[in-house]
Amino acid sequence: MKSRPGNGNATEKVLAVLQALADHERIADISGATGLPKSTVHRILQSLVEHRFALNAGDGHYIGGPRILTLADGLMGRFDPAQHADGTLRRLRKDTGHTVHFGLLAGDDVVYAAKVEGRKPYRMPSRVGMSVRLHTTAIGKAILATMTDEAVSAIVGRTGLEGRIPGTIAGESALLDHLKVVRGRGYALDEE
Image (cartoon, rainbow, N blue to C red; front, side):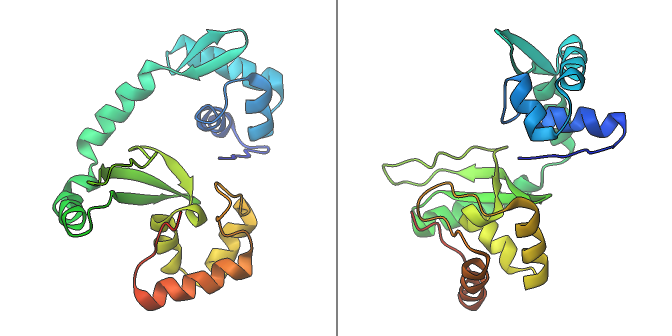
C-alpha cells in the first residue's frame, strides 16, 4: 500500500512510515513507498523503535513491534463490527462450504475484519487484519459494485490495477464491465 505524505505534517509522515512498514522492511523501500527521504524515514523508525511500535531486525531491516498489537487489541476491544456479522458468516459457510470473509473499506483497500474457514481441503491465504486492493478480491469487488463508475475510476486512478494473480482484472473498462455483472447478480466471486 502506498502512502505519499508529500509536504504533510510530522504526523502524516509518521503514519505513512508506519503504514509502509506493513509491506516493507528496508529503509530504502519504505522511503520509496512513502516518497520521504531516507534520512526522514530513518529518524521516524528510530522513534518507532524507541516506543516499540517497530523493531530493528538487524542488517537494515525493520518490522512492526509489539506495541502495534497492544494498540490494536485495545482498540478492537471497543470496535468490533465483525462480532455482529458472526452469525451471518457462519450461516454462509454452512450453506456454501467455502471460506467467508467480513471486510471493511479502509481508504482504497478492503481490510479483512473477520474470517470463517471453509470446510474444503484448501485454505484461503487471507487473515484478519490483511489489507488488499479492492479489485483483487470478491469482497472488494462487491464493495466497488456499490459505488458509482466515477468513484471506481477515481480509486483506479489513485491505486492502479496491479495484479495479484494472472486472472486479476487489469483494465479499467474491464473492471467497470465486471462490476455491472456483479451488480446484476448481487454478489462477486473469487474466480481463481
